[in-house]
Length: 197
Image 1: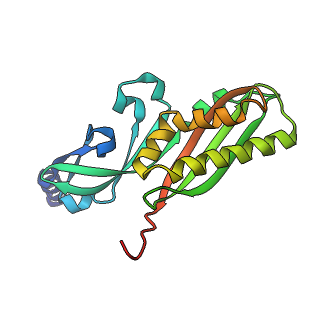
Image 2 (image 1 turned 90 degrees about the vertical axis):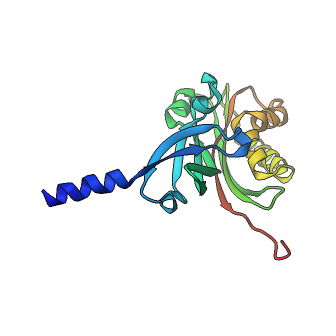
């Protein structure tokens, strides 16, 4: 009985905190979570459907990862940790007798953040190996170029809202019929700040 009482007392001590998305997502409320102390929330990662944040169903296959970086009062503030696409969504897009061209690379953003990015191009027909190589090279170039000119939070938005995929499409459309281009995953690795910062 004493053990049960201890569990109940611990639960009673917990406070409910409101989790907020970063400024780039307008500090929208993305959830609530209980914790005994605010420090227990620091570095906690929250996964949420992008469609839920934006209210747009066409983004429901994208999962955003937010990490709590600070707590003020009962508000928990987050940074973008990365994103990923629901594997089932990709599986439904892939067809036989078509080419699936994927690549993963690490890029650096304009504000010196290193980001691991995975991209996928699906063609409407099976393409030759040399064209696959060319498409993969152009995908890389587009991703590197976009990262170089964007701060990290803006780069994430370019990835998840389709602007980067559009850039890739413009580069590869003349090589093969393109069915779909997706930035399937991203994850921040380091801030890579210079010593003078």
